[in-house]
Length: 196
Length: 242
Image 1 (cartoon, rainbow over the protein chains, first blue to last red):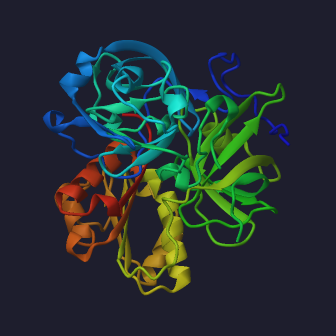
Image 2: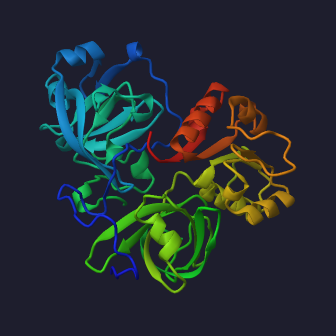
Image 3: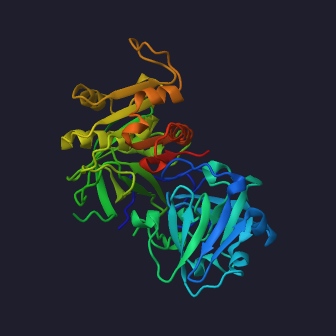
């Protein structure tokens, strides 16, 4: 139904093919969150996975012992900004889930501060997600989710939960915080899965 | 009422300066389903070659009806806000997607907790919508607004806020750079102490909405939590990087 806006030509004429529809490149790194920034002590932090069978816990040192990777990925926020070629350092969920047995296909990710977001395991595994401790060569600041956030770059960035605490696997999909508040249950930027 | 977000065609019916850098746009949206106070929209512009640009803007209006108000602050090197501020004219049409946001909203309710609104700069737009909706609702729940601006020329919705204050809204204006004549306090950034003096104390368990630039929201939300406010009762909306 789009129509031409009288007088609008736009600034950026060349469109980077890495830019999903409706997105705009940014150089800075905007901050979005629904409430105050939680204070999470580095030494108290651990990562927890609960399944139908078990509860697994890793300290940061135990996670890093599984193997730390450097990845360079693009991130896409539902509020229309995209940041290309961000350098991250973290542990692949593949390495973490190598120690976990579950028949479930979905997970609810939980953060300090009470935030939740739902992600299918197919969207977490297969080289698609990390527990990230660093971005752009420096430890994650509290505003950006430090000491650790989930990184799921192929989905809108609200899935990359800040201040991540762990996840609980689920037999069926169930909406998390923003998903209950009008956002799409999946969140693929290339399909513009912004709102439900 | 079905307020699922959808695309709407909006026609500009009025455009006038809001602050030294912002413009108020009144839009007629015949298909608009109404919106809660605090909701936002995505504005989409399309160039003749098909190029599109989208940005999110908070709504200054709420309730039923097909008239929608935006107040757009110009980001000097921006792509969309300079167009909306300088080039968009009465009679022009733009696309809106919305209403969006079911979390950073205020609705009339049975919740007796007082409501504290805290705004920095153009972050007052959704909070003004909440204050106006609260006044219209006649709700007895106490509500107050703390609003930090650089100078008198930067106050959004000044006549409307003064009218609400005349009708009993406690309005605390903090001028960070230039204060108008007659204000005794020297201009300066909001401090933890200034915040504590102006807001409902934590013991009253207020619901708090904070909206503004990231450093402002980060500082204010941190002070609130330090002062014993329940983090779950503090809702934030930010703009800009860090």
